[in-house]
Length: 199
Image (cartoon, rainbow, N blue to C red; front, side):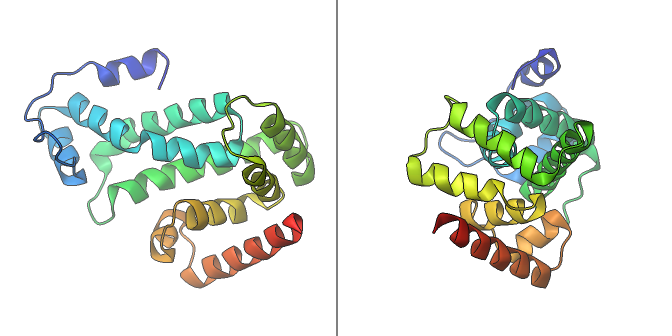
């Protein structure tokens, strides 16, 4: 996280800390956020979910700086809306829903801003993938990522959640607001297209 807006999130005391080595539960975070320790609770939330959110966003937008900025935007939205969170869903699915919407909105705006069709956006992202010093995968991982870039945005995010994040279709349905049947079909089509690209 970077920028002045995020600085205030981290300036906090640490009341009622979990025991050393004890996992910080979502219920503990929500309890502290709704109590008298919102900044401390948010700090715990960022520590728990920042890497996972960044990984999802990075696979969608490729560029490290874009992913870093979008990840910060996601947590700013989480901060601004956490008091409205309802415990009828898991906290991470709610955060992922915000992250997914931010990614899809970013790519849609980028395409419309430059009047670019999907294949031109894919080509631009491929070039960034080749040029970035932050990509740590081997050549096979890079080929897979390039194949992913040729998918429609929604199929790409479905594949990313299922293949890389190992989410269940039920979790993905809650995050993306899409039926399980449609998600299975989308994942199947994505796998088929990727296999064709890798051959």
